[in-house]
Image (cartoon, rainbow, N blue to C red):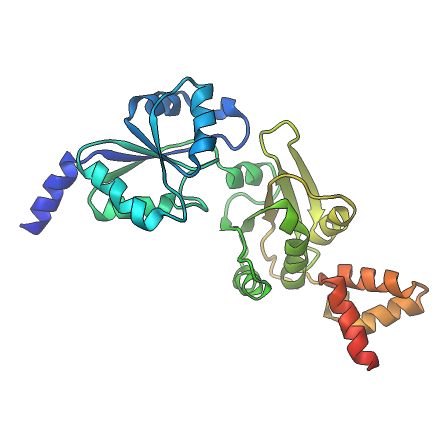
Length: 290
Protein backbone atom coordinates (compact mmCIF):
# COMPACT_ATOMS: atom_id res chain seq x y z
CA UNK A 1 0.00 0.00 0.00
CA UNK A 2 2.80 2.40 0.92
CA UNK A 3 4.62 1.63 -2.34
CA UNK A 4 1.42 2.36 -4.29
CA UNK A 5 1.02 5.70 -2.51
CA UNK A 6 4.64 6.64 -3.23
CA UNK A 7 4.23 5.64 -6.87
CA UNK A 8 1.09 7.78 -7.18
CA UNK A 9 2.79 10.69 -5.45
CA UNK A 10 5.81 10.43 -7.78
CA UNK A 11 3.61 10.33 -10.87
CA UNK A 12 2.00 13.64 -9.88
CA UNK A 13 5.32 15.25 -9.08
CA UNK A 14 7.34 17.47 -11.35
CA UNK A 15 10.72 16.64 -12.89
CA UNK A 16 14.14 17.68 -11.62
CA UNK A 17 16.32 18.63 -14.59
CA UNK A 18 20.08 18.80 -14.13
CA UNK A 19 21.20 21.36 -16.70
CA UNK A 20 24.76 21.83 -17.96
CA UNK A 21 25.98 25.41 -18.40
CA UNK A 22 29.02 26.71 -20.32
CA UNK A 23 32.47 26.31 -18.80
CA UNK A 24 33.59 29.42 -20.64
CA UNK A 25 32.12 30.11 -24.05
CA UNK A 26 28.43 31.01 -23.81
CA UNK A 27 27.83 29.65 -27.34
CA UNK A 28 28.20 26.15 -25.91
CA UNK A 29 24.67 26.28 -24.47
CA UNK A 30 22.35 23.83 -26.23
CA UNK A 31 19.10 24.90 -27.90
CA UNK A 32 17.15 22.57 -25.61
CA UNK A 33 18.73 23.93 -22.44
CA UNK A 34 17.96 27.54 -23.43
CA UNK A 35 14.35 26.62 -24.21
CA UNK A 36 13.86 24.67 -20.97
CA UNK A 37 15.42 27.41 -18.82
CA UNK A 38 12.83 29.77 -20.21
CA UNK A 39 9.88 27.42 -19.75
CA UNK A 40 10.24 26.26 -16.12
CA UNK A 41 8.95 28.33 -13.20
CA UNK A 42 12.06 28.07 -11.05
CA UNK A 43 15.83 27.55 -11.42
CA UNK A 44 18.00 26.46 -8.49
CA UNK A 45 21.44 28.03 -8.96
CA UNK A 46 24.75 27.61 -7.16
CA UNK A 47 25.40 31.37 -7.52
CA UNK A 48 22.32 33.36 -8.57
CA UNK A 49 24.39 36.39 -9.63
CA UNK A 50 26.50 34.26 -11.96
CA UNK A 51 23.50 32.44 -13.40
CA UNK A 52 21.58 35.70 -13.86
CA UNK A 53 24.33 36.85 -16.25
CA UNK A 54 23.81 33.70 -18.30
CA UNK A 55 20.03 34.10 -18.35
CA UNK A 56 20.32 37.77 -19.31
CA UNK A 57 22.53 36.84 -22.26
CA UNK A 58 19.78 34.58 -23.59
CA UNK A 59 16.94 36.94 -22.59
CA UNK A 60 15.55 34.47 -20.04
CA UNK A 61 13.58 35.86 -17.09
CA UNK A 62 12.84 32.75 -15.02
CA UNK A 63 12.86 33.13 -11.24
CA UNK A 64 16.07 32.06 -9.50
CA UNK A 65 16.59 30.57 -6.06
CA UNK A 66 19.89 29.94 -4.31
CA UNK A 67 20.99 26.35 -3.77
CA UNK A 68 24.61 25.73 -2.80
CA UNK A 69 26.94 23.75 -0.56
CA UNK A 70 26.18 25.83 2.53
CA UNK A 71 22.36 25.67 2.41
CA UNK A 72 21.75 22.31 0.73
CA UNK A 73 20.53 20.55 3.90
CA UNK A 74 17.81 23.13 4.51
CA UNK A 75 17.06 24.22 0.95
CA UNK A 76 17.15 20.74 -0.59
CA UNK A 77 14.00 19.48 1.21
CA UNK A 78 12.18 22.72 0.27
CA UNK A 79 12.99 22.16 -3.40
CA UNK A 80 11.84 18.54 -3.17
CA UNK A 81 8.54 19.74 -1.72
CA UNK A 82 8.20 22.16 -4.66
CA UNK A 83 8.72 19.24 -7.04
CA UNK A 84 6.20 17.08 -5.19
CA UNK A 85 3.60 19.80 -5.69
CA UNK A 86 3.85 19.15 -9.43
CA UNK A 87 6.33 21.84 -10.49
CA UNK A 88 9.35 21.19 -12.70
CA UNK A 89 12.70 22.47 -11.46
CA UNK A 90 16.05 23.04 -13.19
CA UNK A 91 19.25 22.84 -11.17
CA UNK A 92 22.41 24.50 -12.53
CA UNK A 93 25.93 24.95 -11.24
CA UNK A 94 28.23 27.87 -12.02
CA UNK A 95 29.78 25.95 -14.93
CA UNK A 96 29.51 22.49 -16.42
CA UNK A 97 27.31 19.67 -15.18
CA UNK A 98 25.55 20.05 -11.82
CA UNK A 99 26.41 17.19 -9.51
CA UNK A 100 30.09 17.14 -10.50
CA UNK A 101 31.99 18.73 -7.60
CA UNK A 102 28.89 20.64 -6.49
CA UNK A 103 25.73 20.05 -4.39
CA UNK A 104 23.55 19.11 -7.36
CA UNK A 105 24.28 15.48 -6.57
CA UNK A 106 22.69 15.89 -3.13
CA UNK A 107 19.52 17.34 -4.61
CA UNK A 108 19.33 14.49 -7.12
CA UNK A 109 19.57 11.94 -4.31
CA UNK A 110 16.83 13.66 -2.32
CA UNK A 111 14.59 13.74 -5.39
CA UNK A 112 15.15 10.08 -6.21
CA UNK A 113 14.39 9.08 -2.61
CA UNK A 114 11.09 10.98 -2.90
CA UNK A 115 10.18 9.16 -6.10
CA UNK A 116 10.74 12.21 -8.31
CA UNK A 117 11.94 11.85 -11.90
CA UNK A 118 15.47 13.18 -12.47
CA UNK A 119 16.51 13.97 -16.04
CA UNK A 120 19.68 15.43 -17.62
CA UNK A 121 19.96 18.43 -19.91
CA UNK A 122 23.44 17.46 -21.18
CA UNK A 123 26.23 19.77 -22.20
CA UNK A 124 29.66 20.97 -21.14
CA UNK A 125 31.97 19.19 -18.72
CA UNK A 126 35.50 20.42 -18.07
CA UNK A 127 36.97 17.04 -17.13
CA UNK A 128 35.84 15.22 -20.27
CA UNK A 129 36.65 18.21 -22.48
CA UNK A 130 40.25 18.16 -21.24
CA UNK A 131 40.46 14.36 -21.42
CA UNK A 132 39.62 14.15 -25.13
CA UNK A 133 42.28 16.77 -25.92
CA UNK A 134 44.96 15.30 -23.66
CA UNK A 135 46.47 12.74 -26.01
CA UNK A 136 46.24 10.18 -23.21
CA UNK A 137 44.08 7.04 -23.00
CA UNK A 138 40.36 7.89 -23.05
CA UNK A 139 38.95 4.35 -22.90
CA UNK A 140 39.13 4.10 -19.12
CA UNK A 141 39.45 6.94 -16.63
CA UNK A 142 38.90 7.86 -12.99
CA UNK A 143 37.53 11.26 -12.05
CA UNK A 144 39.17 12.45 -8.81
CA UNK A 145 38.19 16.13 -8.95
CA UNK A 146 39.64 18.49 -6.34
CA UNK A 147 42.04 16.96 -3.85
CA UNK A 148 41.40 17.50 -0.11
CA UNK A 149 42.83 20.65 1.47
CA UNK A 150 45.38 19.07 3.82
CA UNK A 151 48.61 17.47 2.62
CA UNK A 152 47.92 14.35 4.66
CA UNK A 153 44.50 13.77 3.07
CA UNK A 154 45.90 14.56 -0.37
CA UNK A 155 48.52 11.85 0.00
CA UNK A 156 45.87 9.39 1.16
CA UNK A 157 43.72 10.01 -1.93
CA UNK A 158 46.69 9.85 -4.28
CA UNK A 159 47.88 6.62 -2.64
CA UNK A 160 44.46 5.11 -3.39
CA UNK A 161 44.68 5.89 -7.11
CA UNK A 162 48.43 5.46 -7.54
CA UNK A 163 48.16 1.96 -9.02
CA UNK A 164 45.04 2.62 -11.09
CA UNK A 165 45.78 1.83 -14.72
CA UNK A 166 43.13 4.20 -16.05
CA UNK A 167 43.75 7.88 -16.79
CA UNK A 168 43.23 10.20 -13.81
CA UNK A 169 41.30 13.50 -13.93
CA UNK A 170 41.85 16.25 -11.36
CA UNK A 171 40.59 19.82 -10.96
CA UNK A 172 42.76 22.54 -9.45
CA UNK A 173 42.79 26.28 -8.78
CA UNK A 174 45.83 28.30 -9.92
CA UNK A 175 47.04 29.25 -6.43
CA UNK A 176 47.22 25.55 -5.43
CA UNK A 177 48.67 24.17 -8.66
CA UNK A 178 52.34 24.14 -7.69
CA UNK A 179 51.69 22.45 -4.34
CA UNK A 180 49.45 19.88 -6.03
CA UNK A 181 52.15 19.16 -8.60
CA UNK A 182 54.60 18.47 -5.78
CA UNK A 183 52.16 16.00 -4.25
CA UNK A 184 51.50 14.29 -7.59
CA UNK A 185 55.21 13.85 -8.18
CA UNK A 186 55.87 12.65 -4.63
CA UNK A 187 53.19 9.94 -4.80
CA UNK A 188 52.77 9.10 -8.50
CA UNK A 189 56.30 9.83 -9.70
CA UNK A 190 57.63 12.58 -11.91
CA UNK A 191 57.80 10.44 -15.05
CA UNK A 192 54.03 10.11 -15.51
CA UNK A 193 52.78 11.77 -18.70
CA UNK A 194 50.20 14.48 -18.20
CA UNK A 195 48.25 17.22 -19.95
CA UNK A 196 47.11 20.33 -18.12
CA UNK A 197 44.26 22.32 -19.68
CA UNK A 198 43.49 25.84 -18.52
CA UNK A 199 40.65 28.25 -19.29
CA UNK A 200 38.89 25.68 -21.46
CA UNK A 201 36.72 27.14 -24.26
CA UNK A 202 37.74 30.67 -23.24
CA UNK A 203 39.87 33.18 -25.14
CA UNK A 204 43.16 32.13 -23.53
CA UNK A 205 42.56 28.38 -23.57
CA UNK A 206 45.76 26.36 -23.69
CA UNK A 207 47.20 22.93 -22.97
CA UNK A 208 50.62 22.01 -21.64
CA UNK A 209 51.75 18.43 -22.09
CA UNK A 210 54.75 16.52 -20.77
CA UNK A 211 55.80 14.53 -17.74
CA UNK A 212 54.71 15.70 -14.31
CA UNK A 213 58.28 16.78 -13.62
CA UNK A 214 58.48 18.75 -16.87
CA UNK A 215 55.22 20.46 -16.03
CA UNK A 216 56.46 21.23 -12.52
CA UNK A 217 59.55 22.85 -14.03
CA UNK A 218 57.37 24.87 -16.39
CA UNK A 219 55.10 26.18 -13.63
CA UNK A 220 58.05 26.99 -11.42
CA UNK A 221 59.02 29.50 -14.09
CA UNK A 222 55.49 30.54 -15.14
CA UNK A 223 52.79 31.86 -12.81
CA UNK A 224 49.71 29.58 -12.98
CA UNK A 225 46.63 31.49 -14.15
CA UNK A 226 43.04 30.40 -14.64
CA UNK A 227 41.25 27.21 -13.65
CA UNK A 228 43.00 23.92 -14.47
CA UNK A 229 42.02 20.39 -15.39
CA UNK A 230 44.88 17.93 -14.81
CA UNK A 231 44.89 14.77 -16.89
CA UNK A 232 47.47 12.24 -15.69
CA UNK A 233 48.24 8.87 -17.26
CA UNK A 234 47.47 5.74 -15.27
CA UNK A 235 49.93 3.29 -13.77
CA UNK A 236 51.76 1.43 -16.53
CA UNK A 237 52.61 -1.59 -14.41
CA UNK A 238 56.21 -0.51 -14.01
CA UNK A 239 57.82 1.68 -11.40
CA UNK A 240 57.92 5.14 -12.91
CA UNK A 241 59.53 7.08 -10.11
CA UNK A 242 63.03 8.36 -10.91
CA UNK A 243 65.82 6.86 -8.87
CA UNK A 244 66.54 10.28 -7.41
CA UNK A 245 63.12 10.34 -5.78
CA UNK A 246 64.12 7.46 -3.53
CA UNK A 247 67.02 9.48 -2.11
CA UNK A 248 67.10 11.27 1.18
CA UNK A 249 66.80 15.05 0.62
CA UNK A 250 69.97 15.69 2.61
CA UNK A 251 71.98 13.18 0.56
CA UNK A 252 70.63 14.53 -2.72
CA UNK A 253 71.29 18.13 -1.73
CA UNK A 254 74.89 17.33 -0.75
CA UNK A 255 75.43 15.47 -4.02
CA UNK A 256 74.31 18.53 -5.94
CA UNK A 257 76.54 20.80 -3.87
CA UNK A 258 79.47 18.45 -4.51
CA UNK A 259 78.70 18.73 -8.21
CA UNK A 260 79.22 22.50 -8.02
CA UNK A 261 75.85 24.00 -7.15
CA UNK A 262 75.56 26.60 -4.43
CA UNK A 263 73.57 25.69 -1.33
CA UNK A 264 70.43 27.63 -2.33
CA UNK A 265 70.47 26.25 -5.87
CA UNK A 266 71.08 22.73 -4.57
CA UNK A 267 68.15 23.05 -2.17
CA UNK A 268 65.91 24.34 -4.95
CA UNK A 269 66.91 21.51 -7.32
CA UNK A 270 66.56 18.84 -4.64
CA UNK A 271 63.07 20.05 -3.74
CA UNK A 272 62.06 20.07 -7.41
CA UNK A 273 63.43 16.57 -8.02
CA UNK A 274 61.81 15.09 -4.94
CA UNK A 275 58.52 16.93 -5.39
CA UNK A 276 58.65 18.51 -1.93
CA UNK A 277 58.76 22.06 -0.62
CA UNK A 278 62.13 23.81 -0.44
CA UNK A 279 61.59 24.50 3.26
CA UNK A 280 61.38 20.73 3.83
CA UNK A 281 64.84 20.33 2.31
CA UNK A 282 66.10 23.26 4.40
CA UNK A 283 64.69 21.78 7.61
CA UNK A 284 66.19 18.38 6.78
CA UNK A 285 69.62 19.99 6.33
CA UNK A 286 69.27 21.90 9.60
CA UNK A 287 68.37 18.73 11.46
CA UNK A 288 71.26 16.79 9.89
CA UNK A 289 73.77 19.51 10.80
CA UNK A 290 72.53 19.97 14.37
